[in-house]
Length: 177
Image 1 (cartoon, rainbow, N blue to C red):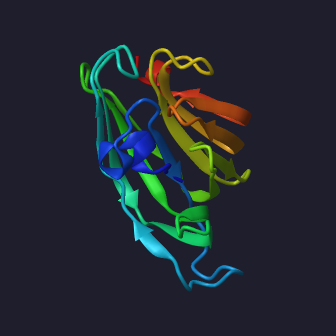
Image 2 (cartoon, rainbow, N blue to C red):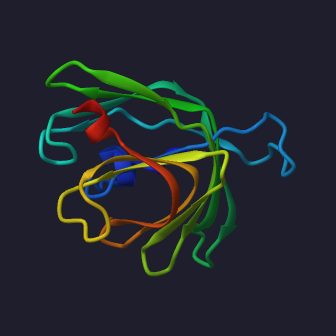
């Protein structure tokens, strides 16, 4: 599952401090039905050396069939609870060396957009979520993280990512170094 681009893609919400990439995959027919699901397609992301990894990192979609569904809204109509699902495979490339790895980040997630401007992400055990963390984050060292086996992430109003629950974690900056 891919976090909206305000975490990973400047085009989505324009924040680049703590970009996160969420991925969700689910069977075509879900218990909640297919009504209201909308396609979501993220954009490639480019992180110059020192902004996420010590090297220039480029992230691109190999497969992106994510969907979102807003299930509750605030009185002003803005989304409160958003479901995510679908297959997503991303390629992470160390532009300096040409080395790359592909990661399946398919799954499901629930995004809670909170009144204080923070966002809480709940990702079940069979799903994955990734987040780009920039230098200066007080909760995690800079890096491109992939969380698997279930996770709960809190993205603070200043776009700093905090892992409240995590099981398996890979820092792709270390993998590609």
